[in-house]
Image 1: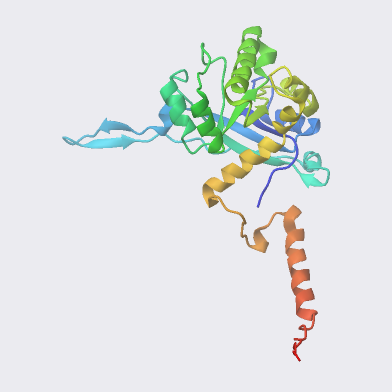
Image 2: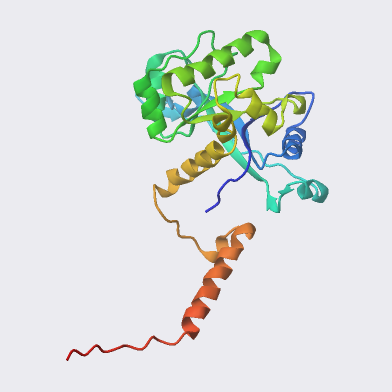
Length: 279
């Protein structure tokens, strides 16, 4: 299974700031030590809703569908690809689709989102004037379904009012759910807004997280989010079966271990059966 290891940043917005390029932001994150990066594309809630439109004929109704933007593909040179090898493993670049609610303060929509088949619930301070409202019941329902709550720290660097909102929402997660299933991402629009993973872990103390919870929000939580995204296709399972030809290059050693074990079992003689006699 294609798993994620190491520090993760699952919120690199696309498009980024006009003063830079998305490629520069991704390369900066790799240099800082992140081994899993997600390019985040945000769409409005109306894109997923089919609108009805009257046709030319009488009583004819046509459904008008809006297209979801495809994942953006980045091209790197050989020198840039060499930077992607961290501790002998390639950096994984994932794609994320975020749906912006039209009225995020509406508790009914938030409670419905907690029961949907999604991976992350995030908070954008510039889009909402009021804080989100969660009850312990709905927070527990979301975490039991494997949904994580995201804290984007780059908003704290841009404006003092946004910094206040991010700290308030992070402490709300601690009050309602004891900071369970919390993930910290950047949401950086420029390379200067990115921070080292260890600096972000120290920032977690300000956000109501302990030292262990802050580090877990950067690595273990990211791995759980990636696995939760995979299980939406495969379903929950104890083991995962895949063809050896379709394994990633870094997982080819598993196929070799299986063939070596089969050869060892084929070469071993069958054990002799012992008869037990009683007097």
